[in-house]
Length: 377
Image 1 (cartoon, one colour):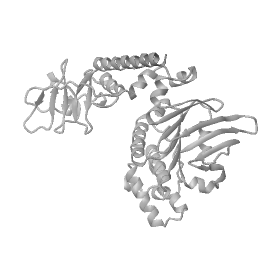
Image 2 (image 1 turned 180 degrees about the vertical axis):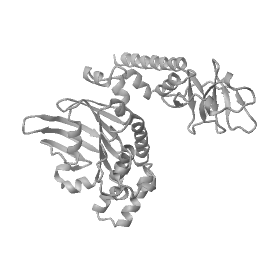
Image 3 (image 1 turned 90 degrees about the vertical axis):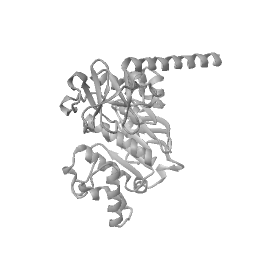
Image 4 (image 1 turned 60 degrees about the vertical axis):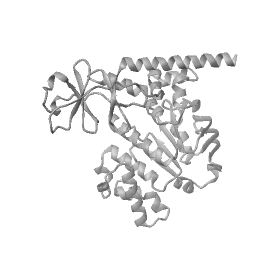
């Protein structure tokens, strides 16, 4: 647990970066600090490991007052990941990751073995071990930064906009990898971002900060999107917060299942007949390959890759309504492809069918609100 008690940071010129911050970041969870530039989110993060000293107030790590621990001892027990990774350019990747274990007195063989283990865990090719940071892409360097922060297995990790310097596709991949790692490791994490989409995707709870370093709202992502505490939070979250909130509405959708047709005796590709002249190609494991116009495939002929339309995202049949709606809207056939946990086709769904389910959720939510108002009255 990380606890802020009336924490203030005031600079000599009179600027107040953080003003009376009170919040608790629970153990084993991700707490995201988000807000406009100048709201004190990075300052708050850096006060935890005392890279910036608070003017007043107390920051606790479990039952330990961080102000009474030596800076070096404190920092060696906290993983720290920053923008652009902050790697040592003259050290190999394996030695970059081993930095903290070596500082803690591990022998070189053990530290490098740990580095190689973590490279695999964060999705880095072991062949990169002897390369230097300049020989890796931005996304690969960020993975090294995460691996380095994990090397000594710290219970706490601080992450200051670690994915903001890479392109959107790589950023999404890094976010997904980060969530996978957290599900395995259960670290206590403070994550700073200026991106509300990243905040609601990654956070177990989100702290929205105002300019001047005051806390506007601390809530779960779903609560933040559906019940912002004031106009500032509602404006910061954005006009499409209702759409973002669909990411937290889940429930199995009834997916249309169509007849299977196989083309060619030796072909591994089959088709499920779609609607409006479209059909979905899947492989032998029923994993979707792409859409094809039925008229373009003469009977008895194998489907070639040149006939496939690969547009359209895939959505889990038990996942969020937002993902299902996105799959339907992005599909060239107008039908979203729903898959199971193994990536196999379950069926397809239209945007209208998803909207119908959304309306059902809204009605249920209103009914619950009305019941609460009656019982509270």
